[in-house]
Image (cartoon, rainbow over the protein chains, first blue to last red):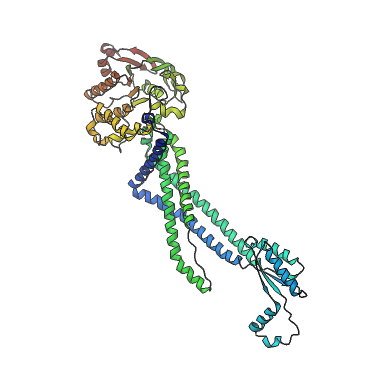
Length: 328
Length: 229
């Protein structure tokens, strides 16, 4: 409705739309404006492509680092699974006591699986593999203890939790000593954590750069359209009407930058895969590089769009206010 | 319709652009606003479209005090006022149609309504056949008429024109003024700022004369009086 003239009606009222039609028209309007912004970018292909390339490369580095961290973590996790606790049992236990102890272990929530190596089996294996076979015949009794190998359940595989579990198991009557070699695990974890911190700090800086790049691009585009903005303000455009195309431009930049970085990272992984396979082969390891999942792709693109909107919003918020028709 | 009550405007730096100006323009009235450059004509128009705020006094449109209108409402106020500028302020990279349609697009009219109204507005200024042209392909007079079409396309009750004939020869000026007269006959309140005294004298409309920010004459100016000034 008109502000000054109660009998004058405005555009929306003339149309007398139902609520559903209004809702529909709202989205149609937004799509139209989004397409208009895309068309504007299309009309200056070189400039737009340069901006998208800068954004894409700025996003590529954090994404690459993320992939590296993810793969290192997966290596780390595969080592974690080797976190096994060996329990050497007291030698004076009867078979029944040993069986009971294993049963007790199996029902503990901290324990995922238990395997028992009887001392006779161990001796046999030792005879077969060590080459001392004949010499061992001279022993009167089996000097080896019964051994229980405990694999902790998922939650108790971290170094701290595994250590606590070890202490708990050691304190039982049946166990003579327990062993858990976790120092190297702790070191590896610490290194991985440090790497993660570095990666996320660098990523944060680069994401800030993306916001600034988009903000600056939008600022230039606002300056270029100064005349148009003044005219629009003169004929009664609200701030949000003027801002919307710029916000859409920021969104498109974000989307295109995100897609580009995804393509670059995917190509890079494809390129590196054979080289990494070669290295892993030399070390006799089986290692496959994990690329970006679909969900990660969505997060990447979503984040890029978010950053694009943020950058353009910062710029729009600051600069459109400054352009007022009274300056002409 | 338009009422100034003891309005003064002092710009930052102490320049007094308007000094206790009072007048009342009734609904459906057409008037000229004249004076030398720097007499305050533009400032007066800017106060009406809220490009500037008065330092002292009240400006009223349709009995609404413009001092009560806050920043967020200014766009809606401007939709009620058609404004025409000396440099016509057209968007050079858009067609005549898009230029004239701009106020309607902003207000959210439907495509069909926009077509209808833009055609009607262009017909009134006699430029229907230029609808697909770009402003750069038009002459100065035609560009000014496009500016007028844009100002009237959403049928505002008030038209403000700042030197609309400033760049035009007398023949074209007359044409432009006759377009304004046609709108005035349709009930639109028209206020035209101009320093083209010859034009005013021929027209015999009410004339507000400003001199160094003061209103020195409110009424008809005749050619004889003009000779002295």
